[in-house]
Image (cartoon, rainbow, N blue to C red):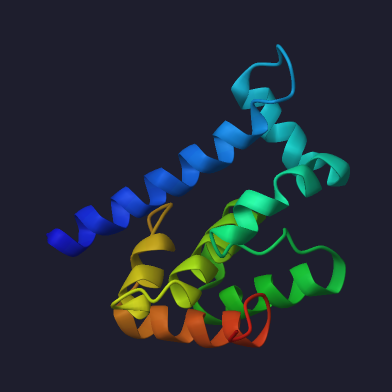
Length: 139
């Protein structure tokens, strides 16, 4: 129970940090500001400082994005029905891998258990192996 609470707190802090950084875009509503930072590469680079300091890599594109999605698909193909959600979860998981999470395999299993898919810690370990080979190599 304590691990779930801690994981939820970390995810909430990261989400607030990312949303807070994107609110500098004037009077645009927060939901639209978040969408525009994902859709526009120039805006995404504005958030790179805070995301990078949190251990979250920049959003992958092209072949790198394809490699990340392939690593996730190898564990469970249902995880990539919403590719953007899968990539966001992968980017956030990098912060657990590099942030010294006490159980990164469990963290990955929890982070990628969505849309009716429930993963085991062993599945989480396989996701982490794939992420280390693609999006978040060991620093």
